[in-house]
Length: 248
Image 1: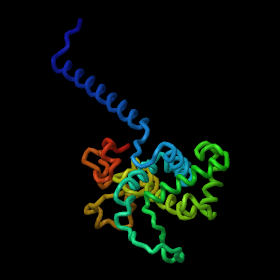
Image 2: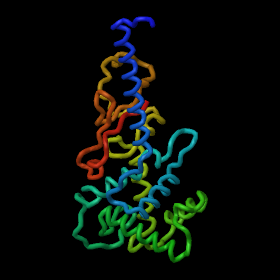
Image 3: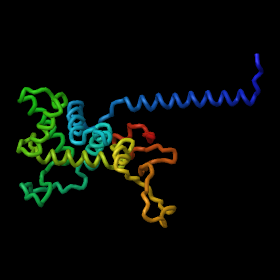
Image 4: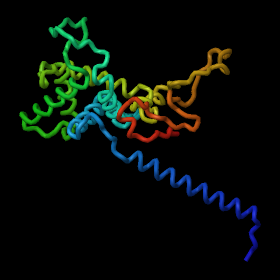
C-alpha cells in the first residue's frame, strides 16, 4: 500500500470535514426552509386566509417570488402581535363618527382588533354562503372575493370590508418591500427583483464615478459580516425565530 504523508492526510481530512460541514449546513437550511412559519397572532384558520390572500395580491410570476414566499404573512403576524398592532400611538378616546375620505382612519379598533374582527367576519361570511374556505377556492374565485371586499360595503363583524382590504393591501406591500429585520422580504427577494441595494451606507469608493450603474447584492439593516440576518428582537414572534442566513 502506498504510504500517505502526514501533510496529505491532513489535507484529505480537512477536505472531508469541510464537505461534512457543508452538507450539515445545507440540510439545516433545507429543514428551516421547509418548516412552516410560527404565528403568534393568527390562529390556523386566520393564517390560511392571510397566506392565500397575500399570494393573490402579490403573486409569484416570471419576475420573481410572490408575497407568500417572501414571508409577508409572518411580517403581518409580527406587526399585529406587537406595539403597532396594539395601537400604541393611535388616538383612542373618540368620539367615533364616520369621517370624510380625507380624514383617514376613523374606527375605534386597533390594527390587531381590526384584523381580528374582519377575519371573524370573513369566516362567518363563508359559512353563511356554505362555501369552502377561501384558501380552497380557485385563483379566479379568490380574486373575485378580494375584489368584492375592496369595492363592497360588507360589514365584517363591525369592520367595513373596504377598510380591511386597504389595510391588508398596505401591509402586504410593506411586508414585501421592507427590510427583512421586520420579518418579511425573506432573502431580500423583492430587493433583488428591483435592484435595490438595501441598507448599504458606504458609497465612498464610487463617489467620484459618474454615469455608472451601481449594482451589488442587497444588504439588510441587521445583517452581520457573515451574511446572517437577525430578526428585530422587539418583535414578539421574532423571539422564537432563528437567525436567517442570507441567500446566494
